[in-house]
Image (tube, rainbow, N blue to C red):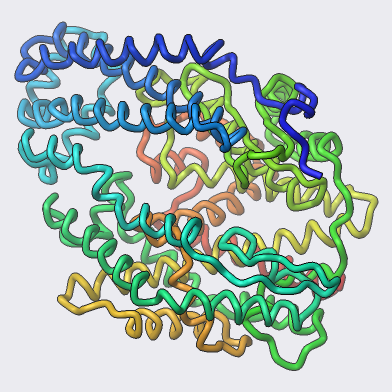
Length: 591
């Protein structure tokens, strides 16, 4: 039975008091921000009139953004720990509106800095050395000058944020609220309703007939709304293309990558290198066929792990010890900080009634990292803990070593730290675990994570690129053309699998396709992480810790070069795939 939140020991709950002591304190901060936002009006047209004015404005901007981040973090976490409470749903909504209001009110700053130009900004810095810390910040704003419109246009675009998110919002409402999928009967006679959330887990059931039924029922129902999803999906693509055009970019892809200063070669190298090594994925799929003992591998079989038994039980306390021991190669400081965090309110561990599903790590500059989990006493949950702790430790080192303006880090590097922790955990368990079942499941988890994170996301990235190019070339996107495009990729990537008409429509259920060239970063992240683990084990953790400490003071590709990884070269992706091949071979021997 799922417990009520009050029945869970406080030592397994996060400590939100380090954000705000009470809802009343949150309300006071909210009202203060509303008043202080009005002060921004006084700086319009005066951003660069003197070094003192510029510094005052940047400090006000920082204070406002820091407070809004804390307000947002508190409201969201209060809601996530029990989504049945309307009070926190309302607080979430209010702070979302406040955040949009702040973005709109700050939108005049970048155009005025760009209008002043690099020479004038450098002169202001010479007059006041306190501005020197903002050098990279100014550089990042100035490089957007060719893609920034007038103050009036930029403010309109900022105000349209909620409207421009309509395709994503509509997709979530359709899939999570309005769509009703049928129920299927489990082998034990229990009836379970299929949902977008549980569908993948149902495909891990050991009964093949059940998997086939779940697969057929899910996609049959999904296909009843194919025209609605296709129309919504096309509008999402057209939104990306039009916004890129408005901002003077050649393509939607270039616009998306430019925001983090990622060279297009990084994207192309990833897809080309992965597609040149699909035989490694095909070997993994052949292994699945062998383990399952079937003559033909079907789409509903692909999620089956190569470990042919139930996961051994791993308590949260055991998982903590395993993860702490696994990260020993990262040094005592890293280990000690992680251990302290695990014992001081970083993690909200167990499921409770009304709690949001899934897991995440989240931190603000003025708070400790927080991790939401729904721990299930299994190997997968242990890996989730290691993953989220990687994000949290990245935030810990970044905040510890950088001022506020450089304390965050981009998505491109975010998945590196989380995946390094997972890779170290796999190595530790394979070398040290006494339980053979635990070793087998660690190996199986590694292979499944790699298949999903590198190959699957690279396939998604290629699909995104192709469908955006169709729109940019004046072609229409229809349900049939999208299914044809996606089906061709599915057949290429999953050669040993008998691709059916249902799986060709899988594009309809992928939420990340509404995130605008987001998914490739999962693939680059795991590639960089595998390369870094080799370097950490052979040369020590110093360069890696420096990378974690960099925050956004360097652009993402340059930050990774500090750690010793060049993502503009195919080498990192090739290294990662070679490790994957080795683990597939190890699984073939073991299983």
